[in-house]
Length: 253
Image (cartoon, rainbow, N blue to C red):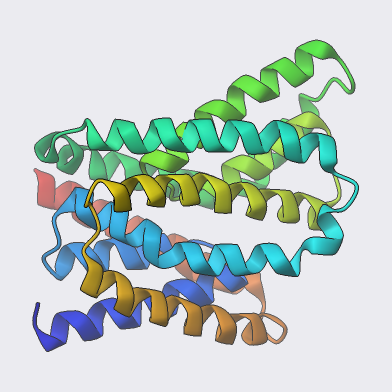
């Protein structure tokens, strides 16, 4: 890997860490950067998950206060996160390179749509709520299990899908929802990363460089988040993600 490639993935990870701290959508930059640097798609997906995971894990500690009093939901979702994340990671391992490469444009399209329409998705989920019913909790369990599998397989848009599932369960305090969402993302990605490490799927030099960049970006992004309008950042990320999705469709044709 040449110096330019290393600089590219470091910059992308720096930006991804900052964006995840401000508005989300960091994987739209870090994952394609690995592909441009010449990392094979499946290894790039696994390496990206490892590089961004420490930032997510660090955020869990910041949400300790908001997580208190959510023991029942923590137990429910954490079990689903670990099992679903593991299944998603194993599904990735069972997918051949050519098929995964063909899936990339569609995965990016799905993630772009989820990111773009996340407010509407959450609103619809809240309107579908039937508070307290057994059927409601069963539905959310099934929906979130599917989300966790997707997170272990690819992961972009995982947080937004998790927020929608929590809204479907009746949660309405955004700070407590973000805390639970962050914990579950750490678990889904953590079990997936452990699986990728155990099976030798990580490109370690890019992973190390990107981890440093993502942590630095996340730290700086947290400071910037207090001074910047996250909605404007989201708009920029949406348009860039649309452009990247179109580029990958053209590239695959």
